[in-house]
Length: 414
Image (cartoon, rainbow, N blue to C red):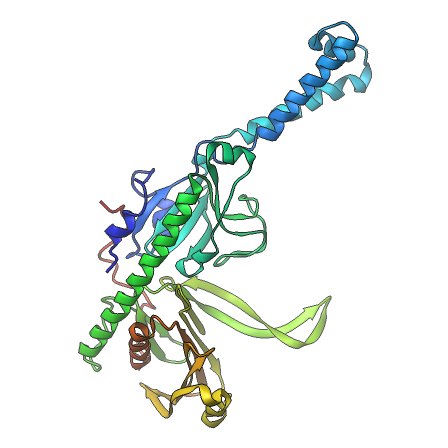
């Protein structure tokens, strides 16, 4: 099993002692830091173009001064004295603006940026607030970007996207990272890309072991006893009166979404769009939610949507739709207070998929699960245990999805 200590061994020593309060507040109580640091001192240094401008300007003044039989500085002073009124302020203004831009480009970025690698995700902080987040399932998109200056010093950006979007909870705005979402200004960026890929592979093993432990605990737990939170994350849906339990270290999102009319210039289109009024990490669920999404590296996808009304598809229709790719089906499937059906099938002759429809009192739950072929044996029992964990819940005041807060393991590994 890939432990938290082995995760920290993939990285160099952390550059920051302790955990800043802004990072501490963002992490779940059981989330561990494998590495914390920031960009290289000159990692975000973008002064080279401005230095080149200075060299070209001095060269040009030297050429003009030689033609007038004077030094560059004498020629510059003569040019300035020959001007009057507002024209005399143009050159000093250009020089002042140039110096301001040069000073901004040469600022030390380490006081403004903090990068964090945990046992669940990558995080970037800017001036005391979380800016970006990425899960291990999307690390395969990492790229190394170097400019001419970066190639000379072997410093570059290890990014997962450029431009709008590209990360969990990100908007389309460019932001202070100038559209390069990731760890910017890293010395030896190719080595950092290799480290992060190894980190994601190690987390895949952690997720498989966590799923197996979740299955073992589910098998020994008394179904009539109050469920405990050891190694599990209990998510309570107060609106529809049920609870579901997931492995505690699975990473995902939970929130409230709805289908709303799509409008262009005030005109309602004949199709709808999904709008999210809340979208939070699993360890911090909102008071009301109707969707859960979990994504794992190599293709794991676990999606649950809860909607009002009766089921929207019959068992026969769902089974017939997959046709020859059908693996297994249960038309009388019961999970606690919910009842319905499930259909397991192969997608592209390799991915094990499950489509499930469960209904309760005035609502239905729609589940779509995709399991990669090399993890099906490890993860399918955990998926079954998740659905077996569904219970009716009508207890007021219960804490929603919060793990045991008694032990806080956010400190850096030793």
